[in-house]
Length: 44
Image (tube, rainbow, N blue to C red):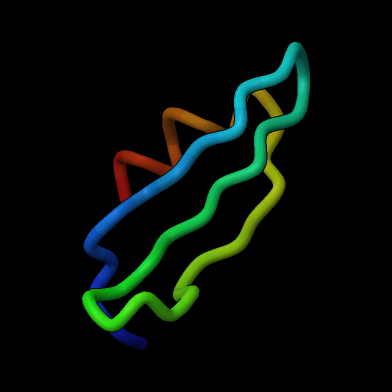
């Protein structure tokens, strides 16, 4: 897996869209997370 350079977060009330992009502009991570999953995800 490529190294994530930029992370985009689409904020909502209960469900968030996370997009991680590498240095070449390719999508590395694309996930849908609930509010309670956000902190554990970013701690990793």
